Image 1 (cartoon, rainbow, N blue to C red):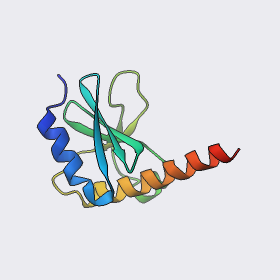
Image 2 (image 1 turned 30 degrees about the vertical axis):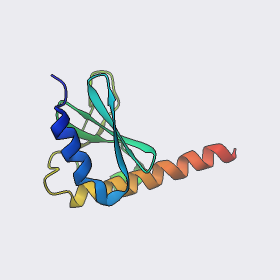
Image 3 (image 1 turned 135 degrees about the vertical axis):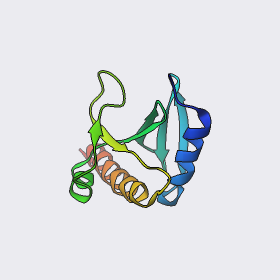
Length: 107
């Protein structure tokens, strides 16, 4: 089916309080970056955010599912109209991913 560009733009706008959100079209769907860190995808008009241990601790009851066949599970953000939870999850996820990348570079 693919993601409608208006939905992708709306979801990115809703997350903008977390940082500089950028969309990148990928195979008819969208990848999302926050301050340069890849953290989520939008597939079939649904937002999926990468799972991190810190994200699971903060939001243990969030549903999880793969964004496409063969992918690892991600958090499923069912309501982007109220961005409070999604913004906080984005902040936690991106901070965790940046720290992990920084530690890999030091080794």
